[in-house]
Image (cartoon, rainbow, N blue to C red; front, side, top):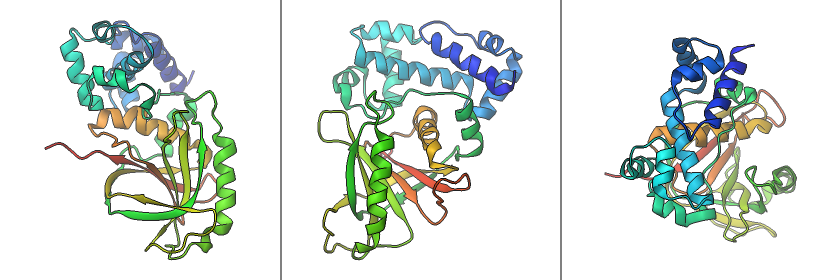
Length: 293
């Protein structure tokens, strides 16, 4: 059995025991690797310590319970490994910038909780095809023009990304040069939460423009405010982009101390992007909340 399969066994064990005491020694035993070597290998593969990973998964699991169960907060806190509701609330607020009481009220508005999906492809991907630490950039207010579709994401049992997004690009790209004042060289995919209550997301295939002008028939304009972004590099076929997004939300965001500001995410397609190629490079950026002073 190779190392990735052994780590997968350990991940499966952790997921099955999030509500119970988990010792690093027992986890290493599940992987059939010595305790010390397991922690070193886990850190090298995931770019985080085993302790931090378990804590992040327990907090994410607790968030899910707040949304889908009627368990009391103290019960959720104890099952997440906290000795008191107060210590749980402090850790929860630090991770998600809201108290458990507020989290319980937002229900399906919580777009940004993504359950981590570790598997061999994912582990290989984050070690070869994604920048584990992003470039932090600040962008001024920008204006875009393009076309929009609505879709259900991979987290939904109605997932229709494969039908909606490629079709949108196939319509948009032949018309991209119709856009007045377009800034050539880069196209963008902008993803944001929909305004209806169906759980659908909105996806815009767009080009940035230097100034407003006539909008071609069937297109629309979209303005993004000045924001700071964490910009990640995705290498390889776009079919594996979910692995990059999964890493950003499930691993980096929960341990970074940064917070999503609930604005749109951005896919950036420049000269390095090659459709259906393992040699392709694109970028995925998430907007960050301002640091509290």
